[in-house]
Image (tube, rainbow, N blue to C red; front, top):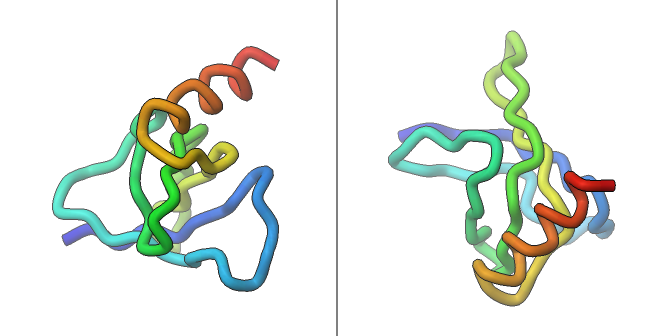
Amino acid sequence: MHTYKLKHDRDFGSDLPKTYESGRKIDEGDVIELENGMWHGVIEARRTPQGTLLVLAESGQNAHQAELLLRQQLSE
């Protein structure tokens, strides 16, 4: 099981998940569903001494919307 720290690039609030667990490796460009039910695209997967930090794009209501938001954010 992989545990990732999360950085929300454009979503703000104290109720946002701070970590994500997955049975598979998460890479840049992947779309993930967090425990709050929101979907995010992964802008960057940063390797740090404390583990891997996922930088997330703006949230979407579903995987398709999150993928579109990720593409839009990467093209800016």
